[in-house]
Length: 81
Image (cartoon, rainbow, N blue to C red; front, side, top):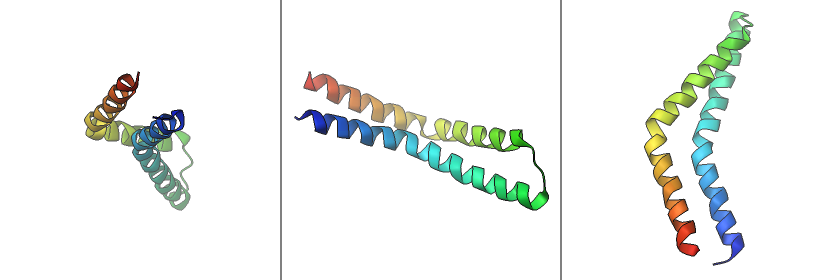
């Protein structure tokens, strides 16, 4: 196994773990920004709180899968040692 392959797999795991939270956080941020523009509410904490709740919800729903994915990658690294 080559070092580049191990690093590539690490990047893929990081994208799989962080991607859903980042994408949903971005979508919620855009929707809240549109809502704030339409209603002329310019409260910064509104967008932050909604994005925080979405990220927590994603962690609650997909946390088991994320932990399993990270454990599989850690086992993979230890078998290579």
